[in-house]
Length: 364
Image (cartoon, rainbow, N blue to C red; front, side, top):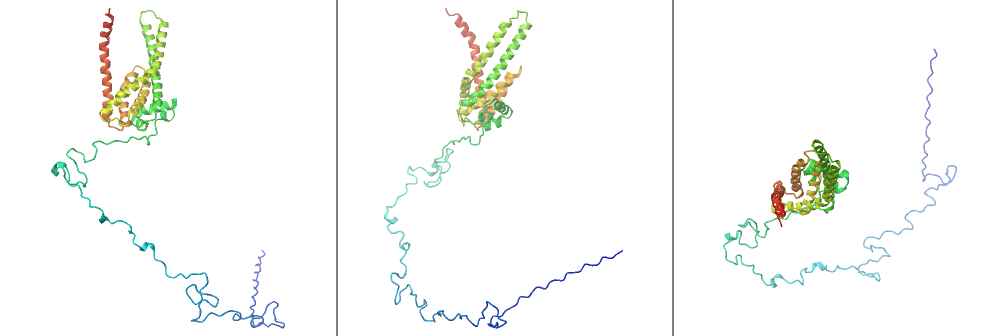
């Protein structure tokens, strides 16, 4: 088998060395002369010739053609020597022109106790310029016995219905009011007008009244079918239609008016115990959102009315507590006190109404 021969190695090509030329020893003429170059010894002028030497010590330091700015034998025309700097105005007396305090009349401080009362009865130090101390009446001198709270809605984003009224936002608002009343009335706006909450109230009342009318019509048909009396379907339909229309009209017209009145009673009791911090509008808006949400519970068969009444009381207490930023006891006093007053008035009217009717009948 043939053996491969090694390849020949290339030898490096030597680089040409630059030729160093000494200009002083380079001949100017002859065969070795380099064209274009001139040796230093011929044709060049030394640096010494043509230059002015530096002045010697003691002579004019500015040269022969320069004149100093300061005073000298021949100052330049039109230039003024700097000379000494003028005195600064700040070095003068800064209080010059002011009247000294000693020229004013002396002020005598008032008497420490002009009425001659003992210092112990005043409840503090006899020094009139000292900080006020606690008085025997429980408050410091000059400090009011009450504090005014500032109510702001800057941190409240509002309920979904307040931001964008629609049926979808109605369902969202009703869900949060019934499911998490503390969160709902922590975010509810306490100002902004009465139209927005009234709209929510009317929708809730209309839904509740329609459900009541439907259940009443169904119950009337069941009772009429179970009795032995003749079945008058026209009368039942007419009665159901009257009940339905009357309920809707009452919800639209009488509902807001009744809410305005009952909200005034709620707020009056809140103010009586110091809990109406956010004003009447906050109370009215709370009642509208609670009543509109609980009225939908009337659509639950059989127990809808009872559930709406008792659950509405609980939600309304939470609403007043968070809307007015007050205690739960004050909110409960307002809600339960109003309910008790309404019950008393209703019972009184119920007892007196038959007597009034009999008295009217017996009139000649």
